[in-house]
Image (spheres, rainbow, N blue to C red):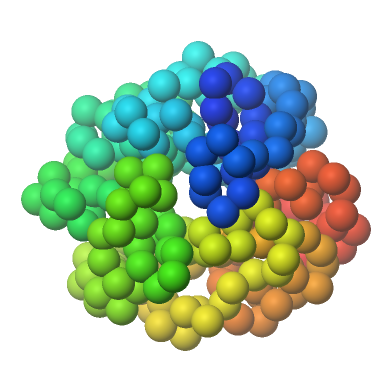
Length: 228
């Protein structure tokens, strides 16, 4: 499955390069993107401002995007408490947490018990380290993260390769084998620019790919009805 991504900063759709604030490509109006992705089964939304604030910041924009979609959405960015997760779940069907399992395992357990399969875990990996707080703070090694995920067994995990995120240089799949079995579904994000990249992600065993800029540019002719 190909999952369209909309990254929000200051109410606009952007694509950060290697996760660095201030280094981004301006994409456009998020509502226009939502219209393009209207028939996607699932749309991935990241509140980049929320990732730094610790709560959803672009809530009104997310609400407007959701209203344009026929399918489901998942929202991530700064969801570090049960309250923030509840707010995200009032906007989308799924909430994506990153920092929480590593910095506050007890709160994560409470959230998992309360929200079940509506909770998705995202690990944003840079130089072999899982990053949090807007990709600014190292939380654990990828090996430690894989061990933790294997214990808690979330319904879905998103692996974002920050080293290539927003670059179009191709996917970084070196940890695919390590992550296999960490959740019922494993999705990949980062560096995808063409159909060859998508096929490599599929061959590595991921259940789907989260793609933004390559979809915006129309580079993925192999994608039909959001499938490869």
